[in-house]
Length: 551
Image (cartoon, rainbow, N blue to C red; front, side, top):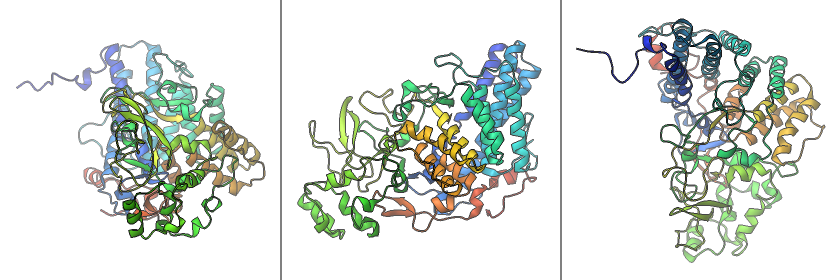
């Protein structure tokens, strides 16, 4: 029997030509796409899943799928990187200049996969050679040992003379690893090590290599600007099934009726975190007297649409809403005022109550309005309500990353062409600010924050802040800036603030006025170090479990 597959190249033959070498390295990049949808992690913090997960309902164990899937996907990336390094060095006929560049790219990618593993699991086995069948038997390295290994790979990457600093937009090589990406990632590692000065040095080099903020926050997240100088490292997407972004699909572009059938929603806590445009804090009581003192259910009255029908009024009474607080012809206008004159990033990121959204109706542009309660569409020319598949509830909906208008790039909007941003310059600026603040350089830290705030169009911070209060403000600034980008969850893990910011008493999946649909339950501080998956413990008896986790 012939056991040689006809549809794939055997590992030992993979690196025999320059073309096969390119394909092999592309496979290391492709592992970035293996189910590691980083924005999903933010559904536990600034966003919310439409349903509770094992992490949020407190039922997570070492057998929970997210742990094993993440472990396996990231180690698949490590395995591909180790195969590539072996093949390029020992087999490939590729000329030496190109070899040097490819080795640097692969070392960055291996460092990135280990970076994610160490962020989550806090110490994992370090494999530097291709793993043979049943050969994954190493014990865990310490968290510090993994950080050191990552730093060494990134140092090799940076030292490679054939690796370019950056690729210009429209370059055929755009999206490949560059020195600016390596400096940025190394600076992020130094943040975990509290090596603030080393982080600052690397962040300064990223700046010197030409990365800048894109002028418009809202327009940064459009396809036409996916190669802006702000982007340091992104996963390349094409609007082809299997090769595209699914941000848009899960954030609300799933059908042709505007933003609806969402997998992910926006948490009310994040909406309330966005300041007034002048930089002053937002408070509901400044807009509706006594709002903060009401129960969440009572607040619904302020979100009702104008001119309720008799049936809608009866339903509101049955929910025990106080209709004496309802303004029949001005209710919408009153609630809209609470969202006006706010940090512009709020309206750029979130479809707010009574905001409009340009969607699609039978291939043509259609303006929808986000009203409550929802009324069925009445036909062309009617004031269309924004429809979701959960119209019995009223949630804040994502606007960021959601496609607009008719004639989407592909019919089902499941494979968008917008590149997946992994690192951008605003992230570097705010990390730089954090490092400066931890060194006591408060004035310099404020200057870095203000670069991000000025681009956003929100009032700048003055110099009255002290280190402790500025630390909290930097963290809030990151939450406002990076909604839905898969950044904030890892921040909260690094700061160990999830218990306070997400799992506080009474929090959970909430409607816009705060009514809790499903509670969040804190599994315990062990969440800051994910469990080694049960299946991996069974396969490799050398592994030791993280404290606090049970099967």
